[in-house]
Length: 467
Image (tube, rainbow, N blue to C red; front, side):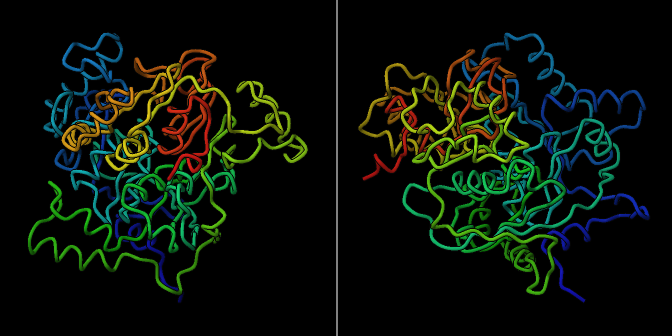
């Protein structure tokens, strides 16, 4: 009998019941909610008069709709204000922990979970948000759910879920200077396509993955969704344990040591079988950027946009449509394009490590005059740390301004929208048509590449500016 994968171990330990030939009833350890996908779920709970089964296992924070300036003032947008107020009302009504606007723990839900130690190895975690896969970086089974499923978890602390297939992606070798976790995941998606992970839960492995910090691992797992996968996870190790030690809601003292002993067993057995295995060499990865309107349309910044002839015949029409939207031409260099906006933030790259990377790069440099740059911390804790470490001062000196926490320009749900026709280099996760605002054009890249674009005013390979 073959051994078990890490995914199997966690999944199987949480199965309450199985429907023959159908989905499993899966117990959920931690439920994260925000203001956009929870109001209708709570309305369903109210309508059925059933209450929240285990409110102590749910944590809430507003993030998608919140402004990133003047958060002490009432939210101007009526719908956004309504949703944030509704979240507050629902959490008060049902006794759910809420980190509301201006609370020291408020932030993007996928940033605050890890930094507070709410996210822990071996857990099952869900949220009404596709990028819940971020938490898989800790060796947890974490995935996004729909609004009706949010209601199901509130009511029962369980969810009906078919078991996905398992894929392992191994990246071996040493990452070169200027190559970051974001480049790793953009490279993987460019190789397997935006649908290459469909139907799978991906485990990331190999020396290049193990070399990443927890922030880097979160970036990789976060964008598993952009390959079409249900989620991604990485086996916990000493890097994980060191990150969690001393976190607010992580175990403490002897309980922490005991937890680590349990967590050490969370890995795929040597003889575990995956439905699919892929291998990549870290030496092949360079700073990456997207040029089209799905995250799979990525390439090395130092290269050219592919010629139409290089695209599979069945995809050529959509390829041409994508380039027309971006106002790009096939077979032209990617670097050197004029950039209007730079956005550093989101649940993909709004952590303290990301801001440190940008500050180190722009220190002693100046932002290009024509570029509008939004540097948005992923949480109040990140914002506080950035000010304490002098990151905010470095950014100010370079012509940038640190904003307040929120999802910001990742999606056009708040005031931070990219104007029509303008080109943005963003550290977020999606580059669909209109994702950052009607008619906005988005190129996804690492914080390092975004910083390079901000100071040069054009798409730039950051390695050309690294000492």
